[in-house]
Figure 1 (cartoon, rainbow, N blue to C red):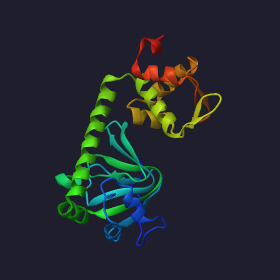
Figure 2 (cartoon, rainbow, N blue to C red):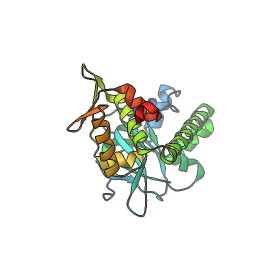
Figure 3 (cartoon, one colour):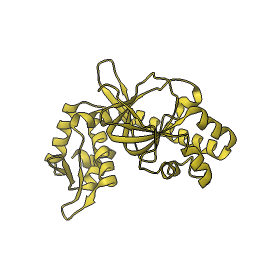
Length: 247
């Protein structure tokens, strides 16, 4: 992983911090003046693509809110193999858990594309939770959702085959950013096979092999770094691991 480089801005960036905070589920119920007051405590941080925001084991001094770009949370094995836990985009928060248990960051975070974040100091965030029960309960709901997501991720990585995980990755990407054309659903695939492997819990060679199998079976077509889903039903069947997909 690249050396950690984070730029700290003295002033707010052109992006509206109040609008960013309002997109966060547990800040959305705050009044306009409360959001403005919260924004005054925020510091803007820019993280260039592939640079670290923080490393596993670092002390947690506050909450990060993504303004633009994308941040990945990941674990790194001693062998250098990386497992991406989640990718957070605009309006998402990063690192709520250690704010409450007093521990250090349980995973590392880095930018997968140039990113801008708001940093809200720990004391300000915790004081808000103490005096506003609605915010506190909304944070609990967010933490509960993250627990469900991580449980699902463990199940996916431990019980599902690589072919199923890759099919789900492609299906989810098609639903999120795909464009329906006469040929099928098209979407860009900017990640390398190694990066895809890190996200679905496998290695580059297995990603390449399973992509070729999907192409050979006429489920998808690869055009440079663009994917064309020719048969969405077959892709869904591959996720389910049905006999149809194995045929």
